[in-house]
Every structure is written in structure tokens, then in C-alpha cells.
Image (cartoon, rainbow, N blue to C red; front, side, top):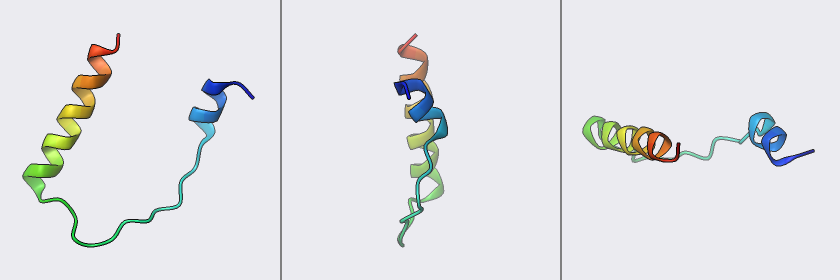
Length: 41
């Protein structure tokens, strides 16, 4: 398998636990991820 196949077919087992980020913090995390994705191109 090449790296792209591994990334596209990867499955993770959720290991989330409380406390979750607040709505505002979660939005900031998502926006930062999107910005990093755009800047990578």
C-alpha cells in the first residue's frame, strides 16, 4: 500500500472522553484545520 491508500482507508477507534471542547473552542479547532489545509496547497 502507498501512503495515500493508508490515509484514505485508515480507521480509528474513538477514544474520546469528557470533557469535550466547548462549542467556540471546537469551532476554532475546525477553522484552524481548514486554514492549515488551504495553506498546504
